[in-house]
Image (cartoon, rainbow, N blue to C red):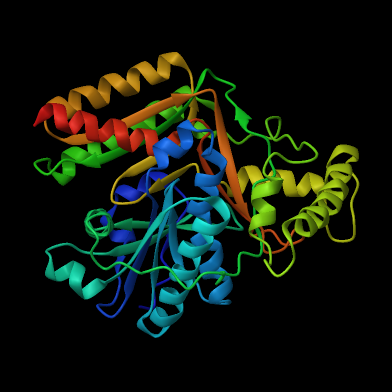
Amino acid sequence: MTIPPKSFAEFERVLDPEVFAPVADEAWLGMTDVVGSTAAIARGGYKAVNMAGAAVISAMMNALPGVRIAFVFGGDGASFVVDDKDEPSARETLARTVTWAAEELGLEMRAALIPAAGIRQAGHDLRVAWYQASKNVSYAMLSGGGAEWGEREMKSGRFAVPPAAPGKRPDLEGLSCRWQPLASRNGKIVSLIVRRSSGGSTSAFAAVVRDILGLVHSGERDAGSPVSLEGLRFKWPPAGLDLEARSLDSRRPLFARKAILWAFTLLAFALFKLGLKAGAFDPARYRREVAQNSDFRKFDDGLRMTIDCSPETLGKIEERLGSAAEQGIVEYGLHGQSAALMTCIVPSATASDHLHFVDGAEGGYAKAAEAMKRQAGRRE
């Protein structure tokens, strides 16, 4: 599956089919999903759910160093595409991640590995493009209906990857969740999913998405990004320290892993608080890159965004989507909350290619997906 280096810097081009390239028939689509994520979130486990969602991306990056993996973070899960030669490694990594989520986070995780040829035999496609979020980071976008179909198949129990043996762990080096929740500056953090309905035309769907993006871009600063320099707050000890400790090498007892992180994060807190450089690490530069490198918007067989917007902009978005849903063009779900949450993959604090996955802090994409299902049920 060698993915051509197609990339674009204007997010609106996700609506241009020319930026997407089909993956090879021999490629594989990997997927994960936390079972009962909304219940876990209701119990206060939103950080753990997001950690589990990002874990498979971190694990795959560490399992295949130097390989450019097309991945999409979905809040309570993730999708990725790999070459046929990397399928055994992907299968083992998925299995280990499922076991880790159960043993360390107390979360049941589904995992599946689906052949691209099978996706096409079912009448769908799997196409990949790269959105350049900043000069340092590009995120994969997926189209063709294959990811949406694959998610349904996974939830039906097909193409399942069983868990690894107890105690087997993925390599999750670099996975963290140290930033404080990002409070809304404009009124509401809104997690939004918009997909084309089965009867909607591609052109009508594109027009709706273009309108939504236009409303956000014209009505909100930073294109609606909830990640701002003034909103990035680092507290010590971080609220996610226990979760991060559970991602470290389990050969050490948990208290020892926590002690290591306490010391490391105390140093980081001091550097951020005092604005001090340490070798090649510059906290001011790092903060700027965090804001630039975040994945608050993406396309995964539909539009996904977690945005900071005013009541006025939200009202316009709901009006446009409600009208489009009534016309049978789209299915959508949204969920409002007071803050956003960020889960990070930082291979090196001195490099600029660190990744930051954004979701709503009080349900986010999981709640938006639930709302979309309810809405679809009302129309049937």
